[in-house]
Image (tube, rainbow, N blue to C red; front, side, top):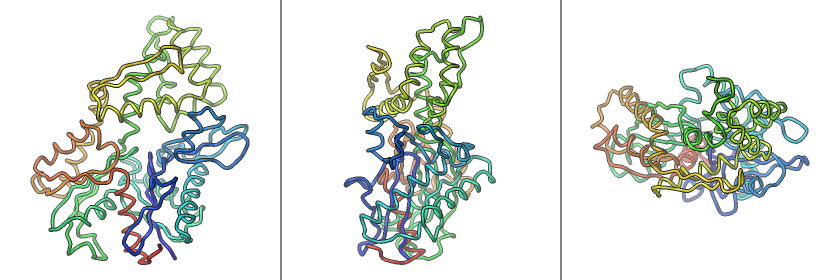
Length: 420
């Protein structure tokens, strides 16, 4: 039995195995240990491509279907639905299974070993306030792991995994808040860490609280898109009939990574042409129609995501949308990002307060806050987190690798074998 730690993330995925030197993340795409959680199907029935290659094929205009944020369908009704690929349909369970299977095979090829046991990362809550939905989401992920060949499957909360990675650098005993703000969820753990504790087989007494919320980077993308790009395509405009707005559902699907492909279903284009005929500003709806006709939803989402990431460092960015209409562009400044997504940052901070309350601790009891996940790079999210524990020491972890490394440590603790 050879085990791995698998961080199947909404935006990126990592897989680690044990080595003589400790946990090791495996290169999954070229020399990179991270692989975007994306898969691209071509209509000719050839095996799909994944990761950066999948995104590149889509952006280059290769005929086919791109899917990203695959993890987001866990805990939603989409997990039991299918989507059009070429002339056929494929279930979302099968899509996830193919991505996980390719990831596992790449890791086996890179290490030269068969991997048959996995510690899967999972958010504290796949679904907010729905214990049964949460149970079903984990069960679906477990069934997929069995389908792709893992014989031994267990789970660990992603912030606890990040805590195990952070603990390797802790010199004295402390209480830490672990904040993992990923693509689909924000997850928190308050844990007691230290050199004398890291080799304990049972860490249950060291975990003081776990909590989370289904708010992540893709939600920031959605709100930014709805507030900036979608009005250029007609969102918020009116129909000829006084007081009747253009239907908003098309725009919400277009601004949501996991729902974009719904716009490519049969019948949608006919509906859009009917909307254009009755719209006050048909030229705006024509832009929307062009995006859907060109299967450009993910391209627009990629543009919005890139703008969001750039605004972590730049005060303003220009988004060029000439592929929709010649000369079309928009300027987005950091203030707009903050304005459109302030509520999300506030919800993240409020959940940390809940976590502190569950632990029975005041804010001054936290010695350190360990940050991981791509959305911690957003300045207002970073500030919202630190505002909950203003006296804590701030430690920035490996943005995309801490959880995978921690899951690998957990696999070593549970299965105890050196693989590479």
